[in-house]
Image (tube, rainbow, N blue to C red; front, side, top):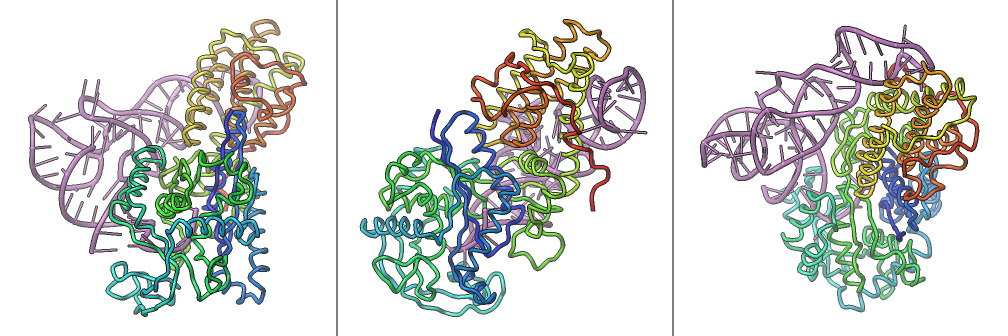
Length: 511
RNA sequence: GGGGCCGUAGCUCAGUGGUUAGAGCAGGGGACUCAUAAUCCCUGGGUCGUGGGUUCGAUCCCCACCGGCCCUACCA
C-alpha cells in the first residue's frame, strides 16, 4: 500500500483533442488503474492549459470572451476522456481560482527566496510564430521556421534565475538515477543542463490573459510558467498542506518527448527555488507516427492524414473503447516513437482480441455450458497451466511497475496463448462429463480469471464483462492484486454465460 | 548553426559484455473441429542504413556519410 500520484501534461486548449493526447492519457490511466489494483491510494490528474496569447486571440476571432472560449474547448477534452473511459480523479483548468492561488503562492516563495529579478527582455521576435528567438537559435537573424526577418523587441520582464540551478540539478540527477526514464531521455536532459543554463523570462506585460504577478500588477506569468505548477495545484499546494505532503514529492509525470526540457530542467529547478523537493519521476514517451510521418501541428503544411486530424471519439466509435485503449498500450513501448495506423488497429483487434482472447472465452464457456450444466468447475492446484500463469503474473507485474504496458500485455497474452494450446492438447470437447473434464475446464477458467486481472488496467470494461461471464461476481478491479493474482482462487458463484462475441472480427480493413 | 534519437526478417518492433541475431503479424505445410473460417503444431540464412577504423573477431565501440525524426527555451 502506497500513495501514487500520476499526472498527464495539461493540454493546450487551442488544439482539439487528438490521438496524441489520447496516447498519453490512456497510458497514464492504465498506470493509475494498475496502482489502484495493487491497493495503492491513487490520485490521477489531468486537465487543460488555458492561458497565453493564442488562446486570447482565438477567443476574439470566435467572438467570445477568453473564458467562454476555454470553457468550450476544455469541455472537449473531458468528452474525449469520457469516451476513452479515463479514470482521472481530478481535472484541472489553469483558469480556476485554485490554480491562481497556488501559482501565486509558489512564485511568491520563489521571489522571496531571491530567484526572481527584473530585467529587460530583449530578443528577436517572429510575428508568424508569435515567439522570440535568440541570435544563436535564429537563422542568421531570420526565423528558422518561416525564414522571415526577425524584429528586435524589448520588454521589461521578470526573470527566473535558472542559471543558479545548474549544479543543484546535476546533483539531483546524480542522486536520483531514476528521475527521468527512459535513460536516453535522461541523457538528453543532462546534456542540456551541462551545456549551460540561461535565466528565463517568466512574465509578460503585453497580454492580460494569464495569472497576475502578485508583486507587480503590470505583469502576468508566461503561460508555460504557470502551466507546470498545475501539478501542485492539483494537490493543494499553498492551500491544503496535508494534501500536498500526502502526494508529493513521490509522484510521476508522464510527458511527451517534446516537453522534456520544461519538465526535466525548468520544473525541478523551479521546485528547488520554491524550497520544495522536485518530483521524483518523469516518464517520457515518444510520438505516434502515421505512415512513418511525424505528426505535430506545426507540420500541418504538408498535407496527408495527420495524427492531429484524428479525433479519439472517431476511433472509439469505430472500434470500441477497449480495443483502442489496448492498441495504444500494446503497440509501442513507452519512450520510443511508434506507428499508428488503421491497419495496425485492425490487426491487433483481430489477432489479439478476437482470435486469442475473445475466442478463448467463447470456446471455454461453450463447453462448460454443454458439459458442466453451466457451472464453472474449480481448477487443480498442480495444473500444467500453473507455471505459465505464474510467469505471466510475474512478468506483467514487473512490466506494469516499470511503465511498460506493452510488455505487461505481451506477458498477459502469453498466458492466453498457453491456455489455447492447453485446450488443444487436452481436447475437453472429446471428454465425457467427469473429474478430468472438470479439471481441464477449471484450469482454463482460472487462467481466464487471471488474464482479466492482468489486463484490467488496459481494458477495464471488457475485463469486467469476462469476469461476469465466467461466473464471478463483481469485477477484477474489486480485489487486491496480491491476493487475487494467485493460482487456484477461481470459484464460480454465478452461471457461466456464453454471450455474444466479445470482439466480433473485423472483416476488411475499414475505410 | 548547435544538441540528441532512430535506421535489424515482407510489416511492426525486441536485443547483446564482440561467439551459431530474436518475437508477434503476414506467408507456406500439417492437425483438429469446442470456438468469432477461430485454435494448435511445424516452418525465420535477414549485406543488423552506407563506407571506413579499432580488434583475433562488431549489428552492438570509434569516425564519416546517407536517410528519417525530436529539441534549440509557449504544440501529447
